[in-house]
Length: 117
Ligand code: 5GP
Ligand code: ZN
Image (cartoon, rainbow, N blue to C red; front, side):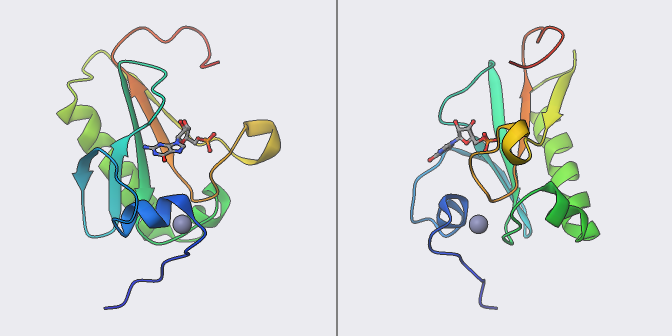
């Protein structure tokens, strides 16, 4: 099966193995890798292998959306985040989204305070 890769998309290039990443979990439909600039002891990005620009587009593909959440839960367990964690989708300009291949930030490993800055 040929996978659609958007050559201009950073995270599609990570999926394709063209850019290195520290992968922590992989399924047929998702990839989880460490954020290059971690904001917490655990900071993992969980993405669908298929390119969706943002969480609005992801929501239109319920099976991919469920797979991303299941992978986030699996990584939280693998990372030992038994005291809790956050799953965040930055979206659009106000949300501060910078990479337009949807990604869940899984952050934890320390108390995070009232909001993630
Ligand atoms: P956003 O602001 O779009 O929600 O988050 C993008 C995230 O991707 C940031 O936390 C940033 O540190 C991370 N990031 C940007 N470029 C790379 C990269 O090349 N590799 C990895 N692993 N993370 C990246
Ligand atoms: Zn992409």
